[in-house]
Length: 393
Image (cartoon, rainbow, N blue to C red):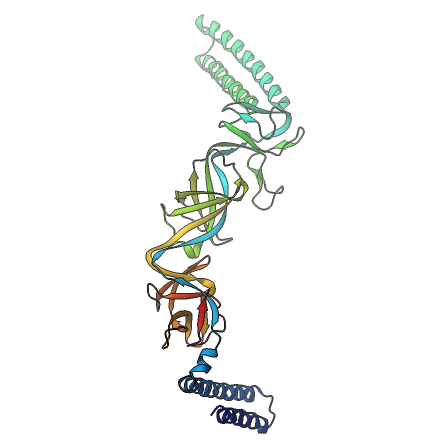
């Protein structure tokens, strides 16, 4: 019986080999595709013949079936659980309140700097002094002009009191005093502008100035990239936020109040939770993103830290999930291998086609094809075929 089956199998394989060798060699793409289809057809036929013969042998010779070595596998019983999907992005910790200090007026050359980077400053504290030689000269000239105008006015007034002179001369003298006072006030303000103060309490976060350099309004774009860098920045670290740039494809999935998980690698992988507080209404054209802000309330966090942000955009409860590495694909779609009782009461492998949903980290949500209690093969599933005997430790 066994010898006859062996002869049949050997003859079938010999015919297949002879048939393939008799085909004239053709290296064209069409010919290769045709030969591939032919070999696949032969493989399916031979596989079916082998499977049928194994079944027949198992029925006629129970000792042969018992000799089949069961493959060692690991099983996991499926049960409903929750599944959450996140959008993983990198953000930066920033201060809610900060100011890029700018001089009033046109700026000037730095003569004195009274703080250094990292210093705590109070609101209104003097940070630096600009050159004021021109402003002082203008102020001195304005004082002289005012004294002259007052003297002229007093002379005109004395004459007018004695009914000497014209009213026009008296009024003009009074106007010159008023104009000189206005000019003096203006030059006094310009002199005051050479003192640069902090707008808010906080820490000197940026100080990109030295004595002798020119302090101007705005940022110096030539210093650091196209975005520039503030010459002086004071940051209030009492209130911090995480700012993250989100690709525009996610704009319909992120809203104010969206749950967030934030990992801070610099703090022993510290993780905090929060919600989206602010969403920018503008998409930046240079990188097609929009800003999202999450406010923090943790004194151990520092500004400018890197933050790994996980924005929750999907959540489901009472669903089945499987490890992503157990998912396999064939010409019909996605499938997994499960273990179930065979005809003889032993465990055998069974192929189940499934439909999947969201994927996150190492988990996949299963929408259909698996049931609660199914014994998913999580280790040793590679190379398993339908009906193959399996065993567990």
